[in-house]
Image 1: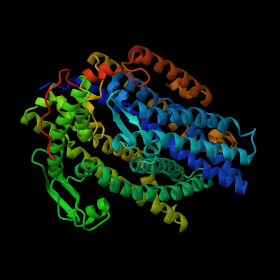
Image 2: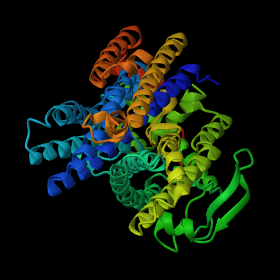
Image 3: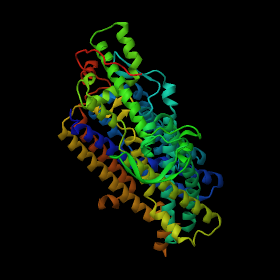
Image 4: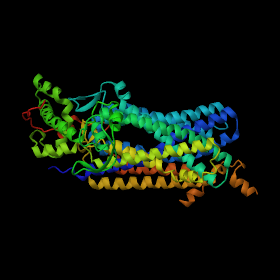
Amino acid sequence: MIPVDDVVSLSRLQFGLTAMYHFLFVPLTLGLSWILVIMESVYVMTGREIYRDMTKFWGKLFGINFAMGVTTGITLEFQFGTNWAYYSHYVGDIFGTPLAIEGMMAFFLESTFVGLFFFGWNRLSRVQHLGVTFLVALGSSLSALWILIANGWMNNPVGAEFNVETMRMELVSIADVIFNPVAQVKFVHTVAAGYVTASMFVLGVSAFYLLKARDIPFALRSFAIAAGFGLASTLSVIVLGDESGYTAGEVNKVKLAAIEAEWETEAAPAALTVFGLPNDAEQRTDYAVKIPYVLGLIATRSTDKPVVGIKELKRQHEVRIRNGMASYAALTRLKSGDKSPEARADFLRLKDDLGYGLLLKKYTPRVIDATEAQIRMAVNDTVPKVAPLFWSFRIMVALGMLFLFIFSASFYFLVRKRLAEQRWLLKLAVASIPLPWVAAELGWVVAEYGRQPWTIAGILPTHLSASTLKVENLYFSLAGFLAFYTLLLVVEMGLMIKYTRQGPSSLHTGKYHWEKLEAA
Amino acid sequence: MRRLHGMPLALAITLTLVAKVLILMALHKAFFAEPMVKKMRMPTEKIEQHLLNTTPSPPPKAQP
């Protein structure tokens, strides 16, 4: 067996950790920018100064987060070229366009208008400034769109063909890449999760002011906007999550089966396992608690289509691996100078299974001579470990339900004008501030770990995507990134806590709590 | 850190941004200045060596 050395594991760890750190900053930027649009729109419509103060105060927290978060994603691009050279070559023709557009969106649209947002208050008219705030929000969401189009393509590589001459995937249809159903669902689900994160942040901080009985009109209005926007966003996340489940059922059957610990193909419509203890070694779920029909309805939108189980998927993968070996042999012949139409036809017939053949490279340099034992190991690799996916997904969904409860209860008591009595709800809102980040990170674990063993689903295995590097370099760069991101996070937390404690008094208008106390 | 928090926000953010750019440049120079792939493209021979056998062999039988 060829050991898949630590380079692949360390490169994965480095990319995963930097992406997760990066995504601590992103959701707040995505959501808070739209909350600022709502607050400023009310200011423009009513002319009431309190809404201008709200926009400025929450804008200040947005600015801290934006400043700390900007360029944290660039480290991922460093890693593409150095740690993931083979992957970069394979996807370069497809990723070039979305990443370039994302760069334009992030640096020109978003950053320019963020500057105008902060320095334009006394230079622009109310409507012009609202336009700037709107463009900040639009720029944030659009830059996320292009990254998620690239990520969606990794899960469902449409609109591209493998070119034998260049040995890489090449773009055939940019429209197919942009309108890839996986990318579209991923985009709306991710930005809606960002809206939930920001809503919980504003709701929790406002609840803190209400508990302390300070700046109540300011806090109540902020709370109301967060409750309304948060409720709509949480409902969107749930509906879009359901759509995401359906899309996974269509194109990522392995991921769906692993998330649901669906070992066997059940008679349609499949039951949903709400709870259980997935046992990867024995390929079964112990103590499973199931709800009849629900998984079938979610994943297939029907009562007569089955959800294919892991064991059956593995049987299908074995066939594809054997076809992949033939495809690999045909490609080897082509690349060795055999230009005959038969060699080309052999390859074209089975080229969709080439990636499955490449899975064997983890165990043997001579794919075409792989033993039965090596084929069995490669088959087992085609399904990620079930337990991490099963639990990550369920914790994420449970948190989503908690958010729905908090926003619904907040909205209800606000409308009934009974919020002040519900101190338990205010305390729960404060305690829940970090939870949307937990849910979002778990969502990424489900998305990315669930795609394993592939970097590009069905096409390029992860172990063949990494560069040839020295382990020491990876350890040092990983340590450097950890120190860098931790420092940023500490600075962000420190500044956020400082300005949250000051509240709207940090605007120095003389109208709010601390300044009134000082004046008294 | 305490000093940073005692500063006006604009100054704290400016200093953090400057520090961030310097750290990123240092990390890039130390670990990422010589990527194996330039402009997301490698010599095709290198990819062939990485993915394929160099000697052709007869194909095994495909399954339906």
